[in-house]
Length: 234
Image 1 (cartoon, rainbow, N blue to C red):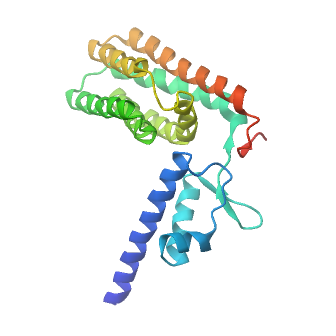
Image 2: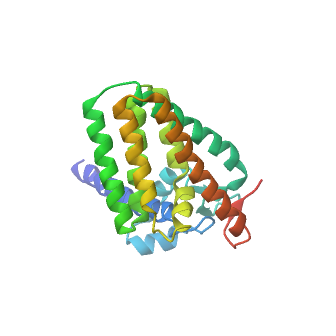
Image 3: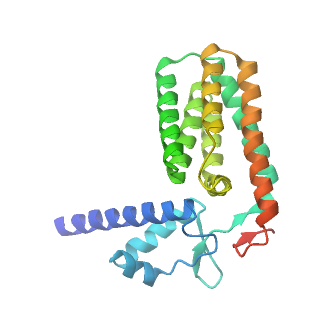
């Protein structure tokens, strides 16, 4: 009985290790959309049986990061560029309602959390660490949503930010990961508006913040959609 429990624990640890590693590689675009994920090769790479590999792939599929083809081969999920207009519309709306909502409330502890995530974001920008930028940016905006106080908004916004991680990775690549200080400063302006309780200012800053991200990505895609990257336009 004890051996069975230990085996489950070891397998679970192996699954988590594979999941975390592949998730990071997918989100950082080290594994590009459409890249094959062969269980045998992954088993050899990680030095473990195919069971934890398969379980990790199932978790990644639940995250929408991998997909299984009709021939049962597993690949990194394509990015559905055709859905980006509606995605951007929803993203912009959530930037606005959460930032505006945060400015209408007061909570010192959550403001500490927001400032901490901003510190991490600024550090990641200085280090040109795109993955850390994406993580810190996500946590910064989720904390603002938490301050706004609507759990439905928070859940939906977090889902949008997670779905957009690879798009954000493309966005940072347009700057060769040298993100201008302007974007750190925009976060600071948002924090200042929230702390001042200026909902109108917070709303306008959110519109501008989302708008420049959308324009930059659209410009990038207009120049690069003919590249041999697996995308979905259906």
